[in-house]
Image (cartoon, rainbow, N blue to C red; front, side, top):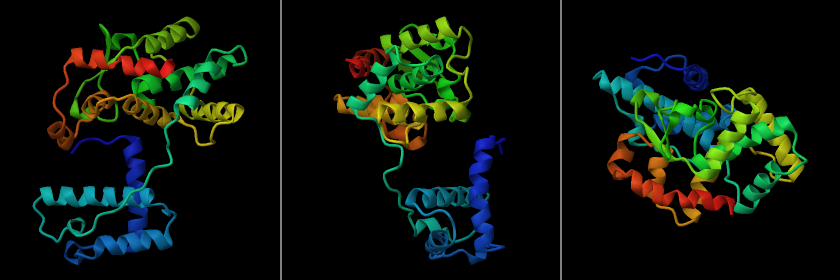
Length: 271
């Protein structure tokens, strides 16, 4: 088994604690067709996991444990063959094109402070590349490969799959601004991750945008605006770096030329 990250440890601890509160010990022989439904009821009534998505995360982790046990050829009734946890539209809602433009105009306005500009630059870079916040904070000039950014996403680094995202004019302009003002690598990381999200919320308040603005919204905005501009789902999957077996079976390999042709849709965000 591989070493897990601190974030993964925290996520699984959030699942382990409710499991211990529900049952101090769970034998494989105790698992049955009703176990998933019973755990769902406990989570809903006796924990802070009030939303469907929060409970889905708990079920996902428990299912991971059980799948590992199956790989070890332990015999038991797998409850998630009989119960499917439900999800709902998440709280990270993408920006509309009008709201996106409002942020971009503020970035170029004389009213913005230096610190705000640093943070907003990183967020807008996420909006036009689809990179996760953690990868935005790792951006290096060495990632530039011709007209593409090529990198291995940190979250899926265990798969070793490289992602190639078009280096649009707007993305390169944000990099140039960061190099001119900050002048160090990795880019977009001069302010702590937590502080970046706090400042982003302050900017949203100044501009009268919804209060939940954070960096996860950048990736959601990239995907939504790309598809709204007649983007192709299989190309989007490649841009976002989907690496699961299901994804690789579902989507064909996308050639660089096709990605380059599609990159004009990303630039259309800014016009």
